[in-house]
Amino acid sequence: MINSYFKFIRSGINTTYQDKGRENLYHIGIPYSGAMDNRNFLIANKLVNNNLNAPVLEFAYQGPHLKYQGDTISIAITGDVIFKIIKSGVEYIGNCYESYQIENGDEIDIISTNKTIYGYLAIGGEIDIKFQWKSCSINTNAKIGSNNGKKLENNQTIKLLKLNSNKDKKKIDYTNSKVENIRVIKGTNFNYFSDEGIKTFFEKKFIVSKLSDRMGMRLQGNKINNVVNTNIKSEGLIKGVIQVPPDGNPIIMLSDHGTIGGYPKIGVVASVDYDRLVQITPGSEIKFTEIQLIDAETLFKLYEMDTDNLLSQI
Amino acid sequence: MINKIVNLGDSALYCDFGQEVNKEINSKVIKYFNSVRKSNIEGITNVTPSYNKLIISFNLSITNFKKIKKEIEVLNIDYENKIINKEIQIPVCCESSFSLDIKRLEKKLNLNREQILEKFFNKKYFCYMTGFIAGMPFLGDLDENMRANRLETPRVKVPKGSIGLTEQFTNIYTFESPGGWNIIGNTPLNIFNNLNENEPNLINPGDTVIFKEITFSEYKNYHD
Image 1 (cartoon, each protein chain N blue to C red):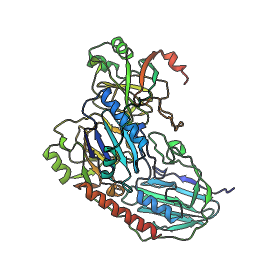
Image 2: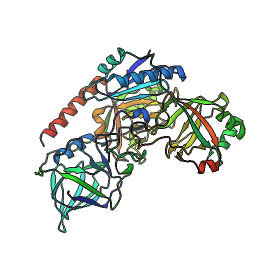
Image 3: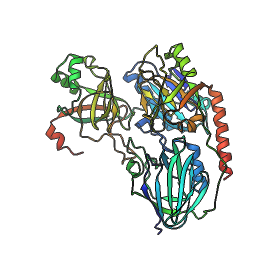
């Protein structure tokens, strides 16, 4: 029986447990959820010797401030994150992509993400949380997943069932790359839009709106003109679909999206760019470029090989 | 049977069964849905039926559009297998605090409250699909003279249990959510149960729904 746990002195703005997410539930209205930035999720787990699909803490903008009680444990933070580790009252600035040994009484203060949205904290061990449909991922809209589907709050604890025996220091030389150009495959309603609308879509820049969250990214700045119909008969959606509602401002479906929608689909973000798309902060510019299916498939393969290569270096 | 199969992005197939919305087309979609789910084609991660489309999502790490399309084109569809469907009664209270958009409907439909409710309750509805939010059923069809557009400005919060109307369809908000449908009543019945992982949805595609009007005191005393 171990009695090791973290306590949230401050939970952060939007802190949830996430893993790979859940499959085969679109037909009842449940999206994948899961870590928004998959590559950073995988690296975090690898740095602390976890199973790659183990639950991690995902935070947005401001992260949690945690205090630890228990036997020495390893942790790692990934993304572009500013954080401190406090040992016996002495503060140290921490580095992302590097594991740390946390001892009884230590604190981790995740101050903020830097010009990105999401960061990840992996804990080397097994966390005591519930799974729903084989996933711990919290979907706060549907109230599904661990912690009764709610984001984490001050004074809650993270109880550990098991600590990993290997706590060796691990690190990797990696910088989170940023993109402004998001590659897009033409959508199934591409021909609903005027030539001018399509020109706007591929040539103008859009601004990411503050009304963006894990469900969707709303864009502003340029309106896309529809010449056929501003509604379609409601049909299934997937992650990355770009819908254009009647007001002409595109919305990109993200991991917690509604599973059915009735707005025309102008395009779908290529899977290779998804991890970087989700990190684009409100107020930033975003530009779309067209990509053919075959090229999107090839680039995704290369991206995956690159991820595997990174993981094998840890 | 599928009119057209195209890609939706790089990790989904978009199967088009036509433009109209009717039981016949929707039944084909559901039969395909059941057959694809049973097929165990490697790499499929989600199958989403709607009125007249079927979207098949797959894991791009292990398969691709070309491979899945080929498998779907030669897939044996079990047309004989009758869809097992239930008839479900849903209690609805249309007390004024629940029927948020009844005035708007009276104006739009040129009918009074009694006429609207009579037409609404005097019908059986077919479940075309579930989704948008977990467990939300899309039911049809409303009488021709009962069809109104969505609200000009959608509500930020539609209360849990709300019964909405739009065009030829009616739905049930399984939990509090944003939404733009015309709300005429509320059900005390839990339509989505996330604690029942095998069967979280009370209503599934192909089922028949009958709404039964209840009083406010019956609503308050209702137990699942």
